[in-house]
Length: 283
Image 1 (tube, rainbow, N blue to C red):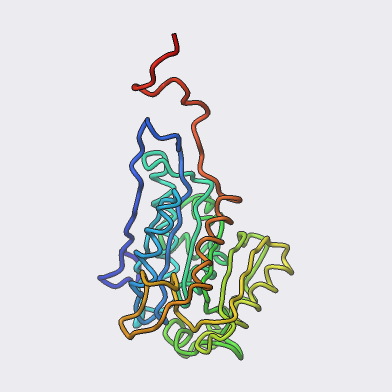
Image 2 (cartoon, rainbow, N blue to C red; image 1 turned 90 degrees about the vertical axis):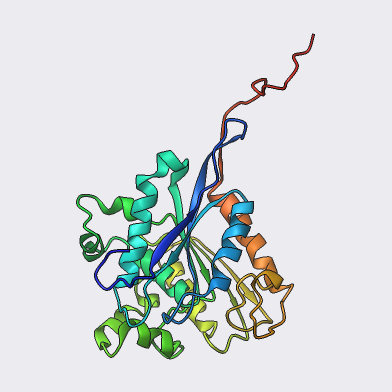
């Protein structure tokens, strides 16, 4: 990434499924994953393990390893915008459905995803990445938020907000995203755990309420068990610190893919019957 404030390690890794004439799928939606880490780092547990799960369901994926502290707002937001610009520029070559490009985030990455969903059409973002003309190329078609940091108020994850905003009071207020939802904010899938003591569930509830007030479609799941940062909540994303998995919480990825398939289905070729090279015609 080469935007003001971007750090050397920031990058966008893409996982594009190879198109083939034999396959019925013509175009695929694409999901940009923003791992969490309190805007201090990007967690690998919330990156590739999730990407591979989504790819198995037929979706193309990109992972944004965005700039964290000491980088401040709006560096990560501009990096997210650049991902959408890259995807839509290459949509035809990659066989990506340019009308089904979503952003997904975990914890602080959820804050980045939600802030992008709310501020994608801010002229300063387009200006920051050198985009001229319509900002529609930056539009996210949906958002997936996993135990997201949302508010800078009573239920804030202070470390994330400090790393992103520093002491800038006006910016901290702007980054309280329950106040930023608007009619251009895309539909959302959100999940959280009731016992999350790091990023309280009130973060998701505040955002959900704001979506409701703006008539933005949303699906929300709350789990009675489980702490913060569970990622897939199974052995594929267990922490090295020996945390147990949560089979009940691990159902979120299936619910999410059901939501995706309902709202952002794969584009399938109209008719392949009789075109397979091995098919023997009936006599």
